[in-house]
Image (tube, rainbow, N blue to C red):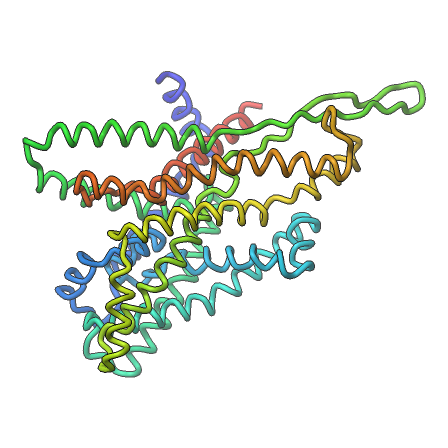
Length: 423
């Protein structure tokens, strides 16, 4: 506790760090203000009815930072920017020039790569915005709109997505932590008062043992998320000694930290994108006059989070995408080449191809644990809902991982800033 209070004191007394923290708070206030400004033409009664019975939009609301629940001008949030970043990462597999740009050209290459991600955000925001507005209009949530009103709403949500991308990058540059993650984090946390009030409203004295059990399980799960998120498998590395003139250099030892959860929350986002796509098509076809399309719509919409098939497919997809994304972002061959160039080697392993094979073997083993863990966290809210009937689970699955990851990252960034100031 004393250590925590000392950190707060150091943050407040250090001018630069205080400005960074205040900038983040100011940006989040602006974000929450914008999320309360709705687009024109909303039927609020239909909106509340639709959202209360639609788990699809509830999940999308997480990635919009909470802006979708009000159909605000920033209803897309940072979703298009996240999608464009994921697509750019995937394109590095198919386009060698992009891979060289991201991995080999240093800071200049990563800046150019980020610029391409920003440009790709615009068409993605247009596609996502048009799809969402079309679904909402089919559901009679957006009413009495002229052609000009529809175009205006589309332009508004595209500009809102670009504005949130800009605010997120400003927070990363002038604040503390990752701005995009902080926006999603703020959207999740902002839902807590409503979730808590719902639990209090439906409170039943006879269910106290169930509530206590739920709290204990929640604490254990959060502790597990922290442990797995921070867990690393160190690979020892030794630098060869070099003689230059009359002096000897090198000979030191260090290690390569391989994270158990190398892919982060990205596999869950990939899996959700695939599983939610049928529901999105079903919602789009819900008001169709064609009997065949209407039947297809009912089948697609029935594929919801309450089905066992959904949970099984969710777990399998998260498991597979964990291996896939780890292979995309981590290149053992490139790491082995860099070690060899710098005169470093893993004790007992030959430099070059043998080192690459050894790192790949270790990585595949620890990724197995990370994949099973991510799959369990993904389907956890579905399991809890089926066992307890409690639907107001604010920090389940993806939301839980994001909250814990953002808090841990923020603590590390603040500690780094404090250590730098002390030196």
